[in-house]
Length: 206
Image (cartoon, rainbow, N blue to C red):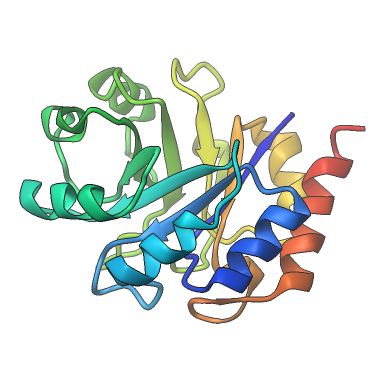
């Protein structure tokens, strides 16, 4: 069964909507240039209310070691998600499982990325948009993903309830990750869109 992560959570009601609809994981953005950035106090409060067996993921872009440790001291994170140019040694030093995001375009060798980040729990594949580190709502050519990647694939980038079934059939990812595809506006989720997205993912397994 394809797992589902709802990313860019900034409000407790959005977390509850995601959990109630059956999300497996929730993403919190600790990157101040993102419109979905969440403060530490706010994140800690929301995470405290997350029920058992839902994975809490912290998203970072080229952070300092000190900042990651500061977040970790205040917010109970299960998994890190690194979206910048962080080397494997950096990603693996915090005693948490991590995902490495890769922005996909022609010429990016995903097999080589998987080998370099062999200690990662998976590769999160997003669209390459110049000057950004994800969260653009743009999809990419899924044909660029090799079927023999040695790491689990978390598919991201421009997914919504209208295309996620096609994406899963084509890519067969371990998980799908959605943010803008279930929003009213950046950082504010729509409970009905979350429910529709998750329903599409779950229906494809029947």
